Length: 401
Image (cartoon, rainbow, N blue to C red; front, side, top):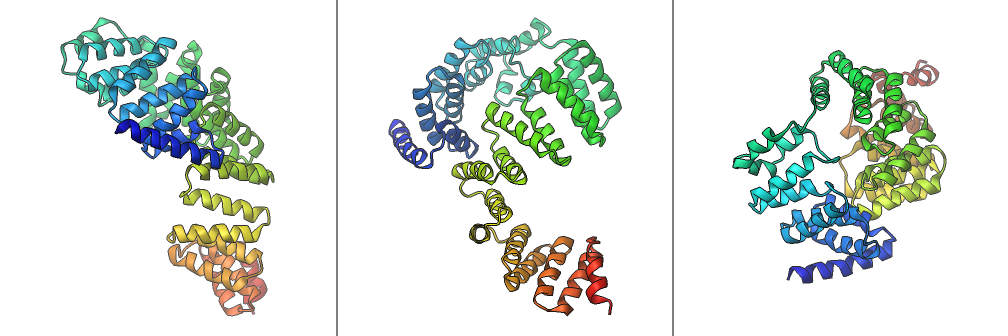
C-alpha cells in the first residue's frame, strides 16, 4: 500500500511540477518544510532518476524516509551517501540505528561522525533526542572517554557562543579574536563576531567580520543572510541581491530569500526578475499571504495598479486581520485615483492598528483629494501625534486657519 501511495504521489507531482515548471528537488524541499514527506519522497525519486550521482538528493530522500519511520529505506540512502563521502551520512545513520534499538551500530556511526569534517558542536549532539536513547547504554560513557573529540579551541568557541547568548559581549569578542588569530574555524568565528557587532550597533565592524567569514567559506548561509541584512539596512541593494543569488545557489531551500530577492530586484527596478522570484515562491507555497503581499507590492511599484488590486483583493480574502494588507491596497487605490476606496481601506487598517502614523497620513491625503477637509485635518493631527512629522506641513497649509 505504501508503494502504491508513493507511485500515485509521484505521478501527481510530476504533473504539477510539469505544469508549474518547478524543479522537483525544490518542490520536494518545500514539501518537507510542510512535513508532507510521502509526496516529497516521490519527487526526490524523480530527481535522483535524473541525477543519480547527486548525494544531496539521496540524503534528503533518506531524511524523508527517516521521518516516515521507513528505516530500512533511510539506512539504504544514508549508507550510499556515507560510502561516497565519508562522514556525510554518519550522524543520520547513528540516529536511525538508535531508533531501531541497535546501540552498538548507532555508537559506531556516532564515533565516525565525531571524527569527521561534518561534526556538530558537542551541545547539539548531547541535546539530540534520538542520540539521547544511547545515553543509558554501556558504550555511551566509553565513547566519550575514548578520546577528546572536541579540542580546546572547539570548547573556546562554544564558550564564546555561550557568552554571546548571555550578553557578555566583550569577553566573547576577546575569545573570538584569539581564535581568529589562530586561524581556527575562521568562518564560524567571524560570523559570531559579526553577530555581536550587529547587536552593539557597529555595522562597519560587522561587515568586515562577515567579509572575512565569507572569504574563507563563500557559501556560509548564515553569514550571507547577515550580510544581506546589513546591505539592505545601508540601502546597498546591488550587493544584497548578489548575496541573495549566491545564497540561493548554495542553499536553494532557503525559500524566504526568494521573497527577499524579489523585493530587492523591485527596488532596482528589475520588475521582470522580481516577479520571477516571487512567482517561484508562490508555485511552491501557493497559500502564502506574505508572498502575495510582496507580489502585489511589486505590481504597485511597477505601476500596474489593476494587477496590484487583483492581488491585494485575493490576499485580503485569504487573511483579513493584517493591517498592512489594507494599507497597501489603500495606497494602490489612491495611486489609481480611487480615493473613496482608498480612505475606506486606510480606515480598516486603522481599526486593526489605530496608532500607525503612516496610515493616518495616507488617509489624510485621500480625504484631502475628496475635499473632506475636516476629516483630513483630523487625520493629519493624528499622524503628527503618532510621530509623522511630515504631517505638520499639511496642518500648517490646510488646517491652521
